[in-house]
Length: 302
Image 1 (cartoon, one colour):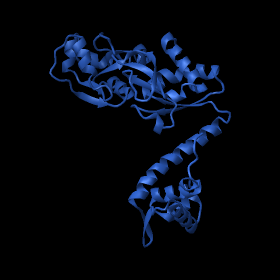
Image 2: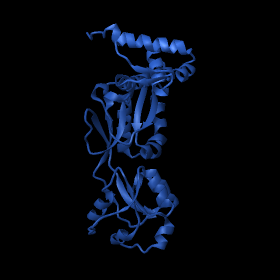
Image 3: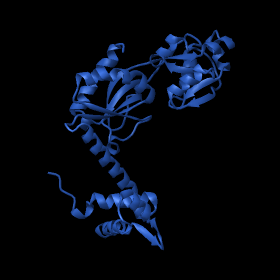
């Protein structure tokens, strides 16, 4: 049986909300206005919190307040705790019967591949509500209110289990006009072209040249943090981008993008569903895991 924390370490939400508001705004007046309270009420709540904790949280200087070092550290923790409580309350209100799944997605994968398919999952699981948030890199599940995340990379995420989804193939793509304006017929020709790079895959072009037997000293070019912006830059004729074919199939079909050189490369990394082991049996996550693994491996069309 888990031991309950002493009451002195469990301040009331109203005291914590007043403290967080003053810490964030730097003003009792502004906090009172935000909380729809009087200044004296906010001051009393903060004083009561300090007395309960036995720690001075603010330095009072005439008509202003300033966080102490201890208060500043406490404010960071309390702000995150209040955010998580608020998020949990919103999730409960959105789905009072439970069944909420908080899923972290990679932006382009989420919009291009996952979102068009989600309707099938929701139709088969009508009691589940999915909330999507964007995460570009790994994080600690213990510190974030996320049930699972889409991960691209090697099969390694500290503290998480991974379910393999799919591999990918990338293609050097550019606009038709760019291809007309530049003499590109061999892989070597791309060394003299403006290349568009993804910050999350800094060595992708080096791998592509190596796989195609092209010797190079260094590879430079514009940097992008998302595939969507890199693809748009390529469509605008800014250069050649190395892009996953399954994420740009619409642009290829429309002719907005074409292969600069028809040499695809299979990425060494894979897509995974990552989740904390202790959440593995959570019904919405279990259902989503089974569905997305099947969906990814079937290669079904939307």
